[in-house]
Length: 489
Image (cartoon, rainbow, N blue to C red; front, side):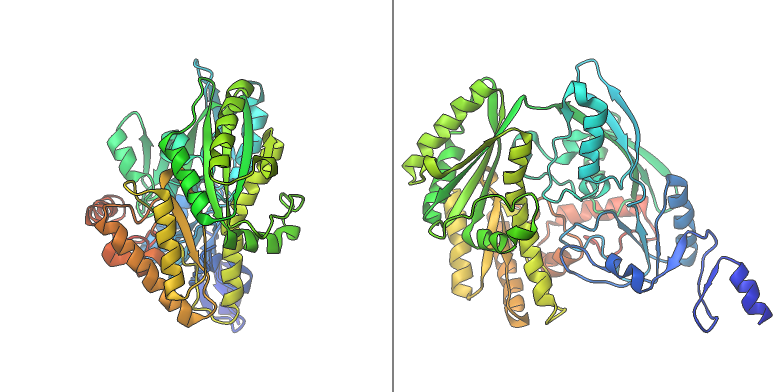
């Protein structure tokens, strides 16, 4: 009894029988229990396990927790918003370090060229980041261009995967908009990495899914917002027409001196059906009209610039759409950030509803996880890529939804298995697609990362030079192999 009381007065954790189950020194580490179950899964629905969890509030606490974990030889999985879809933030034992409490703005600066910098902690999400930028830089009308689909994604997670979102083809990926970051290696050393000091090294560290260190602070580059934003959605009765329209635009992108296409997204009928099934429960899109069942797909296009330039590009888009049997009179055309946000949210709902489908199927079989592609290839037409994906799905007897970045030939095909047998067939189909893309010199991983899920499925198909680079970085920053074990390597 005396020993039990002494232990209770210390920072050890006891179970109901009074047995020590975690003996942390810092008081920052908590044993896993049912109340932390949500931290064992991400949007891929890949599920893991862990012994303990922490929620550091600053860099000093990160270092303190790392020191304890290193002394015990305990692997550490780093988490932000858990919005990833490849299992990068899902633990395979050991300790979870969740950075969601590190969500503050640390500083900002307006530069001579009227652009800006804002320094934030890694746990701030896109929604709150946008609010802070608006509050701080409102008169300057600045923004951070990366626009990943999931607005609850954190800046740290976005940097860790080098994400881009729907406007990546014009603005570039997230790396272009990072000035510097602080990276805590597994031995507690703080590395300040800047795009100016050593650009090549900066390139190597970005997008490594937490295997090189823990991002504790990021300085983001902000640029001028477009004066106006329009969104136009064209609807097509056949997938062939939608594909040919996309190719026509890609081969002759409408331009203006004062405006440009800021996003071009394809959404197929199966995606539309999944969205409309749940639309009433989605605040941003529930007021949008239903889409006629005759339409096989749609192309959502954003135009950024001033009104005159936007109108010029919109006119060209409408003329081209008519050539591919899309009626401009029934297109959705909206302007202004508030209205555009609704149609953008419709596109963002495509992966969200696909993930919800998988979540439903997991109630019957926990082995089912998200199965989606993240591949691109330059030397083929969009219509041909779309046709090949559709043909493969039909010949395999699998259902899938298709959406993605039209002008980059970068489609996300989400397989929708009804049971585990179909899931296994889906894994083999994704492997076949990846093998085909690799043989054609395409990319089999673009913006979602590899994580644990894609590593399981595609490990023998991943580029050797990339894996060798990751191994070298791991050896430099994490010799003991405790950070994000199971990701990539």
